[in-house]
Length: 108
Length: 123
Image 1 (cartoon, rainbow over the protein chains, first blue to last red):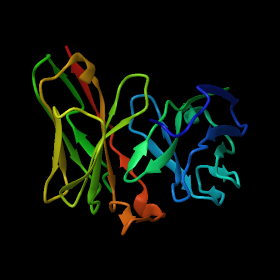
Image 2: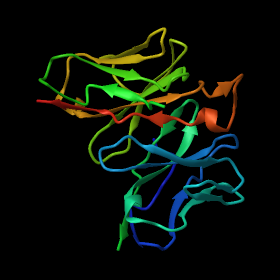
Image 3: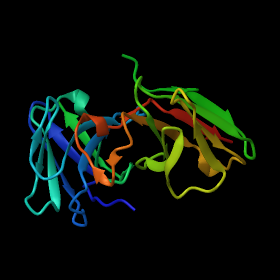
């Protein structure tokens, strides 16, 4: 069973920041939060991951609450090509436990 | 550098048949995992192999089996195909297993890189 819950879908205007929330209230102290995205019919693409500190890379920022029970993925300037299903994942052992993900639609 | 490659891209089988799917990891990666993604759902973990040994198995029947070869490529086999086996089968590779003496490590070595998948249709 997935250990994360996400909204089913979200819309975002092109050029604006997209903020994708995720709840992982049962996360254990040594479990990482990963974000992947999947563009239609392609393999999932790694975005970012973190343990307890906020993280930033060339694609996105990850904000993790102090209690680690939730996190937010931020795409600072969404483009049409960011339209995809975004998965928030808690890694359990060597496997990624995917939930249903959030379908992000970036609109012109 | 070549990413994870999978073959075939698409496959059509009939119920009761068996199928073999193939995966070549990124050069230097020793861990391969297999996932099944049914339409409209997130990928579900099937197997993980590291250094040619099974290191993890998801909740799938014994009809599903896999192996990893000395060059770290991998095969996923499914016997007695059912209609419900129709899905996108994804392979992911990682530099290492991800756990060192029970302590999970971070960094780029634990990123899983996915291939494009094999679309299996069972009629």
